[in-house]
Length: 386
Image (cartoon, rainbow, N blue to C red; front, top):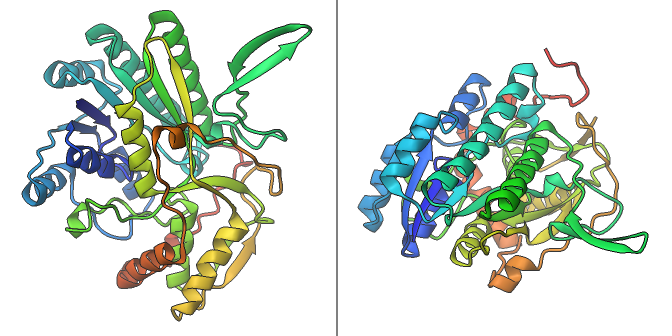
């Protein structure tokens, strides 16, 4: 099918584009290089240089034979959205096109405003474009498990059945985000749910946990096809950060007590989850919510896993508990459901010693590029924005 990937230059967007073309789909990508720009502004470049989107699509076509058209522009601008939809006419949309980092959203007023405006305007424009050009298009939006927070009850898969004073109704599971970024994701869900009810759109909302890894089946043939690997506090996910810290002889920064527990998944699982969601679309007038992760770990458990494997490979890999700059529960109950994607056929890739060793080997190969000063920026959740 014809699939338009918004945010196709990103850590998840680019691997998704390659994966879906390799599976026989007709894919186009859209990006405005926002993540690259923010990384440059904050001096937190990824571990290895990543070619621009035109260069990446050319490399992929030369190695695989698959052509991916690239549209470079800002999806908050309706004129550009109109141009893309008229030229490509998608049957499905994968929406990654958001400022993706919780710490960045808490950095200062400017970062907060950018996160709000970009994330909500893009989502709104996607909705309006689908309604105008083809209301039958399936929207697959990448949400986050962070929308749920850490409630003291089981987390259901998007919805909660409520019995109250003798009456019964199903509601969206209560959200309680821990950052402004996660709050914009809640707003995305609310926008989509409103227009599903109002216009009968078909939407899948993927509540994804933190992703780790760099390798996929498609990118092993050429390093120019690797995704971004950020290891800084602003844009790097926790396991990727710990791997780089272990290689750099920089003690792994565990925030507070380290009992913060989340659902994690390998980059390859993200690709398969998204593909399964696209190939098995939501019904018209349905907001389908799927919790997208494969395993749960506390921060302490992740640090200890990295430490054990890294030490077996000759690295010191110390762990350091630091004052938690975030406002979050450091010890809590966490039991989220995640059966929907398994029912669609997901075969998970688990966090094995082999997976960790391969990540550590890659980081060691590029050890000279690691800049320790960009790892821990101490972005506090409780400071006054200026």
